[in-house]
Length: 348
Image (tube, rainbow, N blue to C red):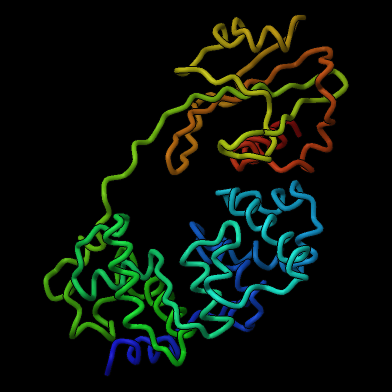
């Protein structure tokens, strides 16, 4: 049996029952694919159900405020995905009259959509013969064929795309693509793959040569930057605080945060109070205390944020206009959402 036949046969017996598998509507497929980038299905499923209930059509998503979309996305991370999703929804609704593009070449032009997502939508919804290549596909193909070319190199990206395209079942490309993704996620797993029950066991090079743990190969990771964040959590006598929207192109664009003092190293209370930012915020008397006795390390793909939350109680601050009872209305990074949950528990 050829590779695609074995794979699809496995899939028909073992496929995951997922809500987006019951539709060919490109809006729902697109939504699921964007959500599942960098996210496990178990986590993404709840968000998908919430989104499709709140925004049943692309017009509903297009009409929403960006802050509403970001609030609903809160906890999924990689917030540029949500902003791009919203941007493209507005483009489809307003410029294309709600008609989703039907070819790979047109789909990939949408903001936030790359080769993988365009291939998935084109093959699943429109039966176009274009292969998907994601982490699962890299893993399956590198192990089965014994390929040591780094998957995050220019050569590797081209090699694996060409190989996946050559294996694709042209009569049912959508089924093949979903099959290889499920096989990588469920069977040929990163850790502890199920080699003893694998339908490819007789011909897998990684299994034969005991290379399963060594493949796929990835080039050295990008250097991780350490940053030191001090959030100033204000509580006035009238129970007001300050939340600021993050602008620019950095992390958490469009999300809200407490006033931030970024330092070059872990800082103590004396250093925070004497900083120019703190003095500008609080010219009058205040009470300050450190909420988390142990530094919180929040890990992003290229940055590790060493974080302290400073609780500042003061009579009044003119910029403090947000009531604490309304604070949950604002979209915030998960780092701040976790703090708020702990703070509210401690306060009650």
